Image 1 (spheres, helix red, strand yellow):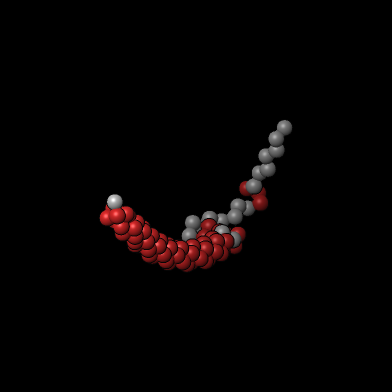
Image 2: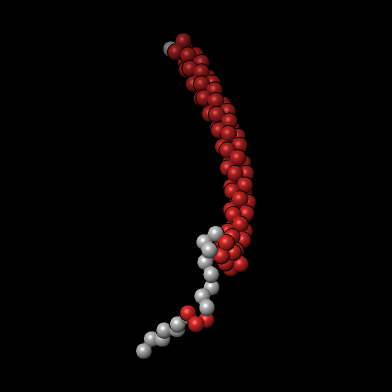
Length: 95
């Protein structure tokens, strides 16, 4: 029996050592994954900011192209449209 009692502490130490190694590897993996995800988050945040800037610029451009003066210029220059004479305008009222 004396020999069996000495094997238990050795086995217990080996189990604890294996648990410590597995825990350490898990910690290293978790830290690495955390850093990778943080880099990805920063990249996506930067991309979002750039897209927001581009969206703002496109909205300004759209409002510039949609002004009344611009539409009238395109109608007269490109489409060769002209304002009708006053005599050619008829007002239709609903009964």
